[in-house]
Amino acid sequence: RAPAQASPAPFLFDEIALKPTADDHLAAGFQRQVVIRWGDPIFADAPAFDVTRQHSAAARRQFGINNDYTAFLPLPPGSGRSDHGLLVVNHEYPLPQLMFPGLRADQVASRITRAQVDVCIAACGVSVVEVKRVDGRWQVMADGRWNRRITADTPIRISGPVAGHAKLRTAADATGRLVLGTHDNCNGGVTPWGTILTCEEGSADFFAGTVERHPDRAHLERNHYETSPHGRYGWARFHDRFDFDRTPNEPNRFEWVVEIDPFDPEAPPVKRTALGRFAHEGAHCALAADGRAVVYLGDDWEFEYCYRFVSARPVDRADRAKNRDLLDEGTLSVARFDGDGTLIWLPLVFGQGPLTAANGFHSQADVLLETRRAADLLGATPMDSPEGFEPHPQTGHVFVALTGNPARAAVNPANPRAANGHGHMLELIPPGGDHGADRFGWRVFLLCGDPADPADGATFHPETSAEGWFVEPDNIGFDPAGRLWVCSDGPGVRGHDGLWVMDVAGPQAGLSRLFYSAPIQAECCSPAFTPDGETMFLSIQHPAERSEDLASARTGWPDFQPGVPPRSAVIAISRK
Ligand code: FEO
Ligand code: CA
Ligand code: CA
Ligand code: CA
Image (tube, rainbow, N blue to C red):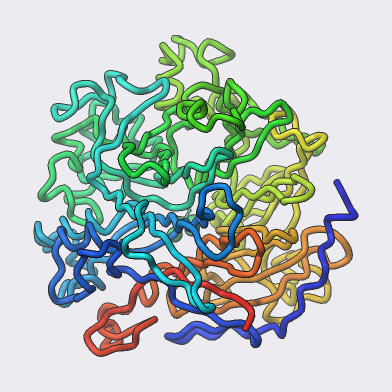
């Protein structure tokens, strides 16, 4: 720990109250600007958004829906500038009931049309958009040379140990090395060489099929697939590859981490199979003491695990091109949290311990394809839905947000509450700051809940106000000064989601305060700062997502115009 740096200067603002209204609310003295919304053109030739005239060809040239992960990469690359850069943004999943007037939520899977499905496919994936601050306002540069859309049918290369595996081959791709699209992209990370990792979180919802008839039934069940006639969004009705009765291996081509080089728009994205296959929430990067790349990975599901990947070779700081396939070789490990405060990283390596033919593993590719089953066999610690991982910019301690696990009966040291509906946070302590070490220290940083309700056992700082506590932490981010920003994704007992900020060390550690109240039914995601800390980009996802049966569904945040539905958007927050 580095105490001199761990307690940043006080960040003063008048705390607000959570307000479950259609609009968002922000601490006094700060301003927020909508930078880009679902449907906004990101190319000079793209049509303006018109909800009555949607077409997949238009959606491919527009910002996608349900923005989640958001990264700011300064331009020129490596310049550290804070007024010009690329935003790289995930578009996690469609909301057909809000996208298409007249389509009810309970009819999406059975009534959606082919044209509507193809709009959804085009509206998911990733956007790369050049932005510039001019006279205090962020502008989207529609002619930006790096602007790009990656959609749920963009050709993507599969690389690493599982590429070409028999269980990745399909009629459309006999090589098992080229897949169409990425979807369910939740959070992500920026690599030390400036590429983006976008995470496929939980593809099961996108697929249709009968689990009981699948040749690899136990594998599907272990990955939480359920029998579904059309899949949640009806894609399988028009695209056989989303029906695992017809295309049994297609699910194996998802739930990976995908690397995108935003500075090379011609380069295909790459699924990096060495980073394992599970419900990847994020992929937060760090460096080991010897220069190898480290990627922290949470599997966002109840009773699933925390993982870490360490590359075989060090990052080449002088020659970016040498890092192109760095993430194809290395060691994936899974966390075991011991009661004595030790975290043991258990390597998922074929041939070691139980990861042998006796348990059905014949190669490292088999281990990675069934990462979860391999982790089960190693005795990893089942967690309460691990989401954000974020290393502190000064101390290197890694903070982990766990959204919760109401189904928990048996507790363990790192998940100490049964029926944990409120979630908690852990602090992982790499020895000497070495993210590549085999063993870390760890402690519970915070148990979430209402401090006024003794049954919750919440551990916020005693001066935390009635608005300052939160539940169900999801995305977290440090500002350059080392303050932790926490987005909730519940809303749970608070009834509404928002963004809180607190110190993680020093006398005010755990004194959380509410800074931003989201639009109704929205989650705010991915606080991302410019290098100078003056602008925070924040991703506002699924505003009014359950309002499709209300008149308000045809007006909504942030436009509030008749005939315009609620639209997810990235906002920029700065001091007035
Ligand atoms: Fe997409 Fe784990 O939240
Ligand atoms: Ca999300
Ligand atoms: Ca999330
Ligand atoms: Ca979540």
